[in-house]
Length: 79
Image (cartoon, rainbow, N blue to C red; front, side, top):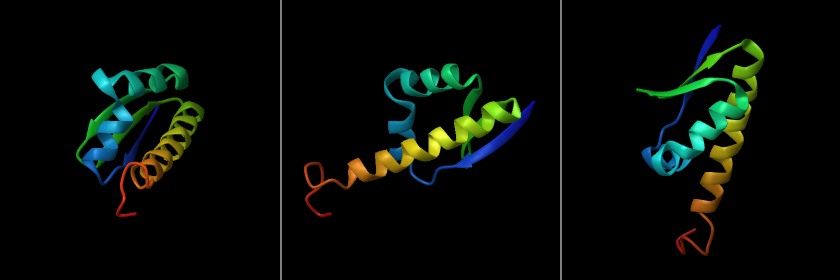
């Protein structure tokens, strides 16, 4: 088993990543075969080496999408 901390510096991004009633993060954890929990610096991913790597890549991609959508002119005219 391996545990990795993936840093997230914004509570808004963390909230969007987890989703309503944690449905997004629970689906991701299930699909990746990992356990995902919050910690002081972001999220803690626990699982096999391969599953943790896959989950971390998915989280990185999702955070990129969340940040881009938040700064889309439809949602935020200051972008």
